[in-house]
Image (cartoon, rainbow, N blue to C red; front, side, top):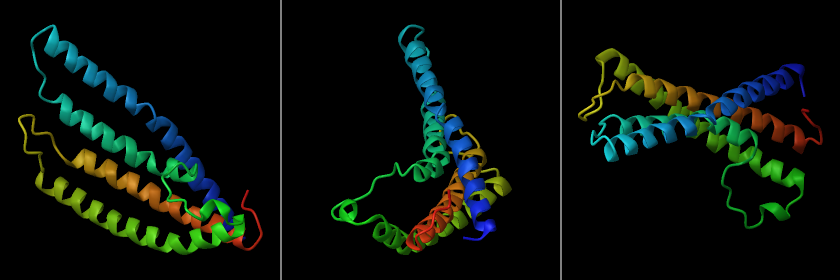
Length: 170
């Protein structure tokens, strides 16, 4: 494989590894917010209106920013009826074909994310709730996560292509 492809795969893997490992700690932030809400509601008798929405935003950031890292580690869900029985090169061949559908899906999702983020920024879109937070920050984070998954899907396609050819990108 050309050096540019090897460099691309290494670069994308490094970025998704860094972002994914940092993103893992968002679960603790979300747990802290929910614990704070439970304590304030139970012991202080003061319900907090922003906690549920902020937890939802944190969870969305958690799974979208961690998506590329999950793909990199092959930790996503896969329907496995025949797949594990196939030789490694056959699996790579099938994965390289299905990668086109994944890349198309992620491109369309990214396009929608950019459009939605642009709208939220342009019009100061707020969520319809008592707290009414701005929607632009979470939409931008979601678009970044989708973009990182797209980059990782392309890197995985290159890795599968190398495997089909009997080579390694490592």
